[in-house]
Image (cartoon, rainbow, N blue to C red; front, side):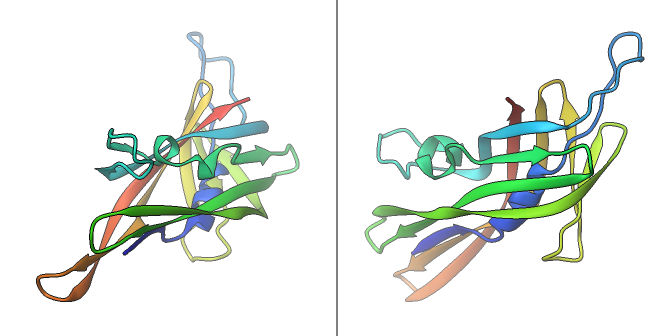
Length: 171
């Protein structure tokens, strides 16, 4: 069986999401300009894809495929996304095999309204939005993680879609 991020491209675009926040006086606005690294990729279910005996909801901990993935916001409203993909195969005996796919780069545009960042998603009609708080940007993509399981009792493949949340930390 294979578990995959249904649209990691959207994830990358999600990196584009950042926003501003205020200090105690309400006078300082944070802007997303700069480079942000993926530091967490949370899914709804826990798995032990790395085989260390500890199941986790954080794909960033379960595979090294996302190490160094980043998003960079520029002051000309452009954003560059550098992201890798992970294909996770789960066989009939519940054994896992992770295959990292080399990254690809995407360029898009972004806008900011308060603490919300919106990134134009050219692959889908829905743009991506996230929030910034301090040195983190958080983005949730509904049903963006697809898991494919083999049901040996019914001799059928079952697909489960889960929400995932990406957390970026400013470098």
